[in-house]
Image 1 (cartoon, rainbow, N blue to C red):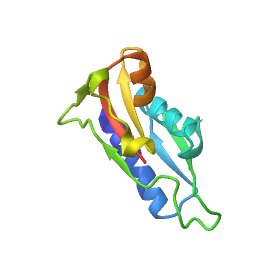
Image 2 (tube, rainbow, N blue to C red; image 1 turned 180 degrees about the vertical axis):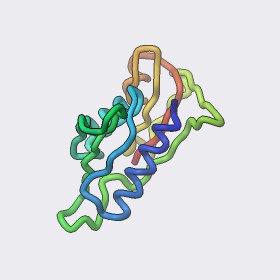
Image 3 (tube, rainbow, N blue to C red; image 1 turned 30 degrees about the vertical axis):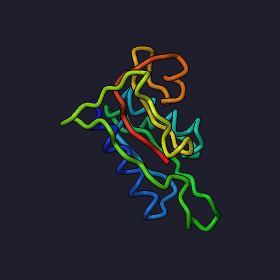
Image 4 (cartoon, one colour; image 1 turned 90 degrees about the horizontal axis):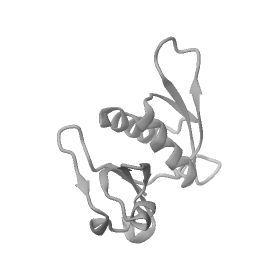
Length: 133
């Protein structure tokens, strides 16, 4: 399940390094929720579902840069915490701020995918998916 998330994050990272306007990624519900959170937190411009891809679910993610010359990407660091080979689960007590509150962590809880800040507020734990700064 998180293999598609890892693929999505690496495609975003590579697209930012290559200064692309958008990247197309394979999608499922978890990937869509992670991308939705990235949009809400201001790390990407927008995303949309592609309809002409046959039977594959695809998302087009529009990348965001800090300047108009595409020299500084909006995302400086993306790190997968939970991997297919090693799942990482944390409780609400173990949730710490990412980069002293400057970044955002994404966690999959029993009430859906949310930021670590939101999960801590609701006193929820779950699978710690990734960190973005």
